[in-house]
Length: 191
Image 1: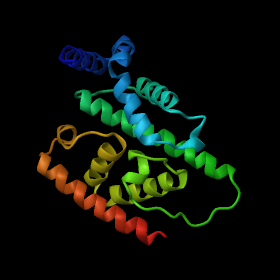
Image 2: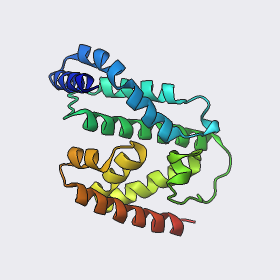
Image 3: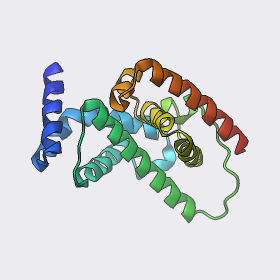
Image 4: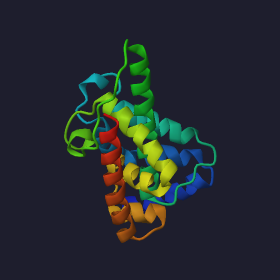
């Protein structure tokens, strides 16, 4: 495991040096972690039959490979970027599905970790409402939004988030508490 971590770090350095072959060697080393992130984001959402965890991992990986000047500091940073890419793919998918449906109406969502991505199905409307709230949060405080994104969608630990953002663990914990409270209030007022 530690040997794999060292190889991941080495490959990420090669990717930053524009070595496209490094992406190919990297995939098997990070696949299980990326799949866990994908499953966390999709949850048990049975309405997402065409976009399963495997497809989400591969779509996100392709997007990341196609980036010009890709640069990743370490494994945590790579996984954080992967989580963001997966989230964006899911949001795009949900928006396309919403556009294909008739009607509309109010979005009824709450920031409930147990209901969204942690242990159960993820409703597309909830995902879209959370995405919109995260956009508003990012406009207000970008770091708070990133902490939520990396923790909630990426499953990164507070220590990993601190490393990615270059802040202390207590700062991440404080940001997480503040952002959760803000999102809970914001989503409750959207009802």
